Length: 513
Image (cartoon, rainbow, N blue to C red; front, side):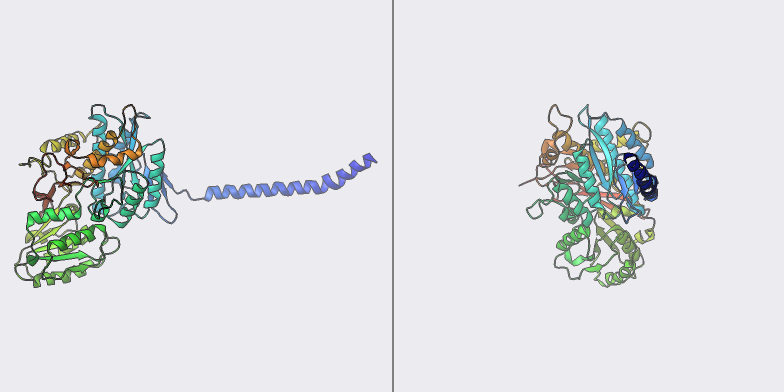
């Protein structure tokens, strides 16, 4: 009977059903494996470089790069090789990281030019910190953070920056923040909320600053450039703008930069007999849109003003400024001379190939620059900046044409971006090293932002753009404001240094209470 049982088991279970079930299981496993393999092969690879990806629904490569990845910008490649060489030379554990946050995937030609200059200045300050600081520690590694051409991928990039701050990369500050936009404002708010110190280089919007209403919405934010209000005050002290002789043209609805510039200009000419003239640009203000048509109409109103009116205050971005200047070149009242006064966006016009330079024959365009290479070279003021600080930067520039410093690509200082970015990075290095306790190779993250209120007096940063003396809110006090005029040759001619307080700061450079 026992033998009969095993025969039955073999014939009825093993030889027919069990083998069939095993075959089915094997087939299912093969199908599942094949499906997994197909998904793996066909899944789209959205990585661009280490730390950089194309997010779902976007073709932009965003994130934080610590390699020589160029974000599709050929003009940056030579410079990025120099940065990568410097980063790779640093010994593990000897450095902290500073990230430059900029729209590295921008396509607008003027923005890319500024981007190149900004990165050059940041790198030169990194190299100086690592090689010309008498062995001070920690060393500085530079990372590139891209939040998208329009800044709309800021959330992903902020997350990546926080990851670097908590990891072995030891991110201790974010610098750059070149444009005062709503997305930039959100990124700065979130970075500082997470305890990451931020140094704004060329942001000027009043609502991207602490202390404006007695509050500090961005704890840990320091700025190198004056606010729009301070720029307007400096411009008023230089140009003697009066209500009866000026017309305001402004961006409606505006962004943080244009809105606060408009408000500052409006205060200067309070009581003007002329209604301010609005224009509405595309949401992406680097695009042309149809504003040229509006500007053609506004030029008629300009000519309709009394002959005493000789000044136009322009609160807008650089693309619209260029369109407005071109329109004024064809105005009907060619017998009248006008001066257009605007903020630091005017610096973009020096490299704008679409500017009609013939419009400048009987039209003066002057703007408040963030920096200018000639500001402290001829008859410099006794305080507020010095020729020696300009010479230090010029020495680095001379060395940057070849290794080990460079090459770093073509140099152009007239838009001020290289200079102001250099100073912003120097402020970052100052805060990091002042916060580093004896015996440590890196400072606690939270302590870096606590250094900003002490950057004054003998602890000021002697920038190439002028002295950087910060108030308790991290804003520069009575910072030098170069007034620059656009020439018919497309150059930026230095006119004069103006001061928000009407005169240079005292030699102690201590903000009043």
